[in-house]
Image (tube, rainbow, N blue to C red; front, side, top):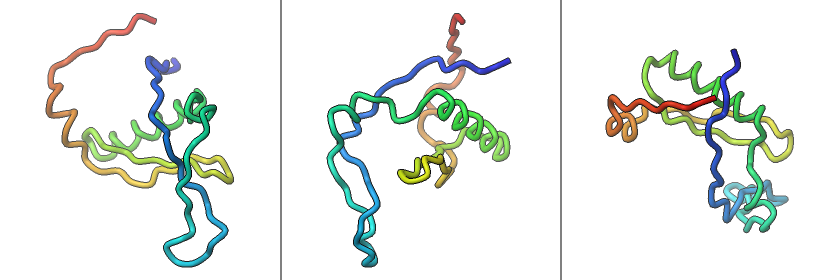
Length: 104
């Protein structure tokens, strides 16, 4: 069956990085404040969330351990990219033997 999204939360999203018109090395990205509308809107839709979850499960299965996965959404083509994955070292150590149950 389909895996449900059990929880969504807003991040702070006070700033964002956008492509700059400046092509000088180290200056191709501008950091700007987000609008109030952007701060109050989820960054990802449900399909994107499910796709990231699917990719995370594939990565964790490959490495056979919990992973800290960094992703980015391209502002031009809208595609999601996995930009880094490394072994997760904090949460997996503190929550051993914790079971959460969700009613669907």
